[in-house]
Amino acid sequence: MKIAHLQLNPTFNILVTGGAGFIGSNLCKALLENGNKVRCLDNLATGKIENLKEPIENPDFEFLKGDIRHLDTCKKACEGIDYILHEAALGSVPRSINDPITTNEVNVSGFLNMLIAARDANVKRFIYAASSSTYGDSTNMPKVEDIIGKPLSPYAITKYVNELYADVFGKTYGMETIGLRYFNVFGRHQDPDGAYAAVIPKFVKQLMSHESPTINGNGSFSRDFTYIDNVIEANIRAITTKKPSAVNMVYNVAFGERTTLKELVFLLRDYLGELDPKIKDVNVIFGPERVGDIPHSLAAIDKAKELLGYNPQFNIESGLKEAVGWYWTNLK
Image 1 (cartoon, rainbow, N blue to C red):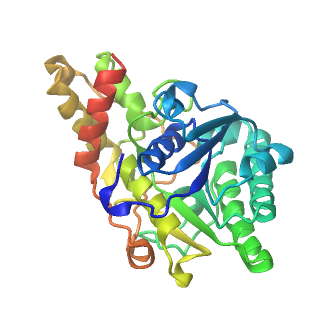
Image 2: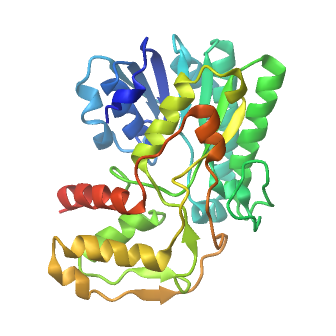
Image 3: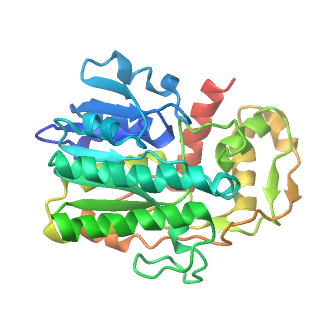
């Protein structure tokens, strides 16, 4: 996506870790379209090389297969880099509950390796994917950056530790870091398959197959669903900001509106039903609540608006329409 009002001038050498994944591949494409040179580091454990079919054709793109759990690989990836967008992680609350050791190795040890490599390479700024899971059991609504609760999963612990490490590296080594707490991102390239598939692509695939989607709980749990292009904007804002007060901070990245899971699945059914009328007759199933889930999530985005100039363009309806169009074309 070429964001006309967010041109990077001059252009930069940018490393995107996890660049073959859902968010990372979208960032790679957008950065290349804005005229940058992009290096992607990914071990393809959860990312897919197919997500990079357009970037790979670009002479300004370099793919480096490697694992952030290896410090030498991280150092090689950081050579000649101006900015890092660190997206590499093992996501999913259920995955972390089933395998906390691997989640910690990737999300904490791998994160530390990347910080060290970035420090030693004198990278200008280290921008990393934080998570709304950090808010844990906090009941404050909306979620404000400086008020968090206790983590509810191993995954949430790892993402909070990332923030602590970034803060310490800023204070101890003078590094510039920015953490972006993503809230339930969705959009093109998000994988509908696998045990840990995110809810939106999973529901879309089920509805397209005329299968009944299952909602965990009674459908009243709510999320601040955030379209991928809003996330791209936040990352570019994090690169371009020149405000000293904006760095070494953590920001919510969301739209700032709450949608229940029940509302979500009915929106998807309506939008997909315009393409296939039979989908409108598909029933919805309600199942047990999922362990480690937080009931409600709504972001305050005032801080990102004020310090980064963040101005998300896609609400849940416009984002879902874009996503449904992409899935209809690419999943059939």
